[in-house]
Amino acid sequence: MKEFFYIEGAYLILGAIVLLITLFVTTRPFMGPGAVKKGMAGVSLFLALAIGAHYWVTTSRMAEVKAAFEAGKPVICESRLIRKGAQSLIIRKKLGWRLEGDYFVSDHYVRPFFTARCVVYE
Image (cartoon, rainbow, N blue to C red; front, side, top):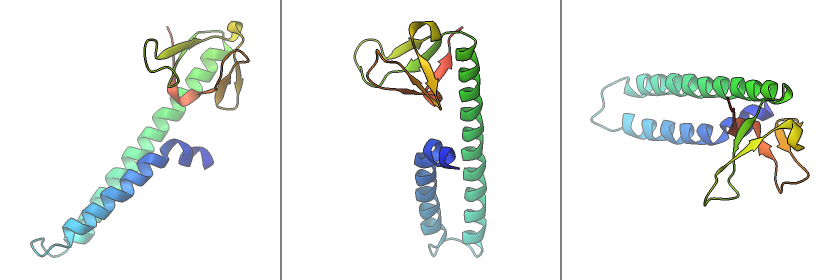
């Protein structure tokens, strides 16, 4: 459950803001009767499906990246440290990288890389 909140935390906050906006709009005098119930139910269902789908896609990609890394394939990860020039980094097991939980770590690099921000390089 901790992983879910870590990956989807920002989207959960945005979803709460969207629900507050929906509540505000559906309680206006020009809205028909039952608008609050219909609006909140519809928006909540959409947000739940969208956030759930995003979590499923992200965790599936993370599993694919981990399996490819263990098989010795190269993995490309987003580098937020360097914003100018190369914004991605190719990670390989034979280059001294290792997998610690959900992070790629190297003794030769300043920071770890979260597997959710990586893709398999083919």
